[in-house]
Image 1 (cartoon, rainbow, N blue to C red):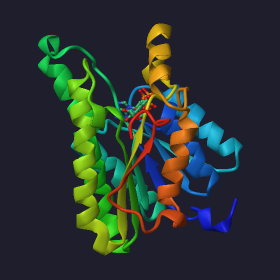
Image 2 (image 1 turned 90 degrees about the horizontal axis):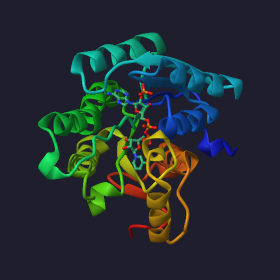
Image 3 (image 1 turned 180 degrees about the horizontal axis):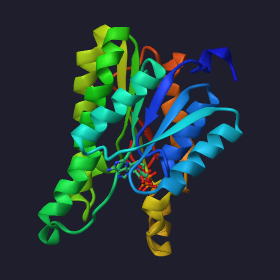
Length: 251
Ligand code: NAP
C-alpha cells in the first residue's frame, strides 16, 4: 500500500457499516489506517462481526448504534465520536433500505421510511459531521446513491426519488463546503451482491446480468475501492461528482 493512500490518523464514520457494502467500506478504510466508527440500527451481531474483521486485520474500530433518520440520535452519536476521538474527518453515508411496491399500492409510510432513512439520514449526518470539519478545514463526505437514482425503476419510486435526491444533495453540499477543503462526492453502485439484493430470484439475477456489459453482479469490495479513492489523497481534487460502479449498465 503506497503511503499516498494512507488514511492514518483519520476518524471515520460509516453509516450502515454492519453489513454488505458498508462493511466492505469499513474494512477497506480500516486497512488504510482510519479509526472506523461502525454504525448500525438493528443488528448488533453483524456490527460486532465488522469490528472483528477490522481488528483482525490490525485496524481500529468502534460500534455506534443509532437510527440515521433520527436527528437527536445522530447529533448525540457524532458528539460522542468527537468527544472520544477529537474529531470526525470522514463520513460515509451508506445506510439505506428498500420498501418496494408499485406506486398504486405504495403506502405513505413506505415512502416516508425510505426517504427518511436514505435521504434525510444523509442530510442529518452530514450536517452534524460538517461542523467539526469546517473548523478543521478538512473533511471528506461520500454519499452512497444508486444506479436506480439515474434510471428509475418500476416498483421503487420511493428508493429512486431518495437516491436521485442524494445526487442533488451531494452537488449542493460540495459547493457549500469546497472553500473549507471539504469534498463531497457520491458513489452509485449498480447491482451488488448483498442482503439487499439476495432476495431477488435467480431469474431476475440472470436478467440483470444480461443488462450489464461486464456480465456479472458487482461485489461490495468493488464499491469500497471507489469510496477509498475519493477519500484518499488521489481524490483530493474531486468534488461534487458521482462515481458509477455498475459494470457499464448505465453510462
Ligand atoms: P444491506 O446489506 O441491506 O445493509 C444495510 C445497512 O444499513 C445495514 O448495515 C443496516 O444496519 C443499515 N441501516 C438500515 N437502516 C438504518 C438506519 N435507519 N440507521 C442506521 N443504519 C441503518 O444494504 P447494502 O446492499 O449493503 O446497501 C448499502 C447502501 O448501498 C444502501 O444505501 C443501498 O441503497 C446502496 N446500494 C446498494 C446496491 C446493491 O445492489 N446492494 C445498489 C446500489 C446502491 P442493520 O444491520 O442494523 O440492519
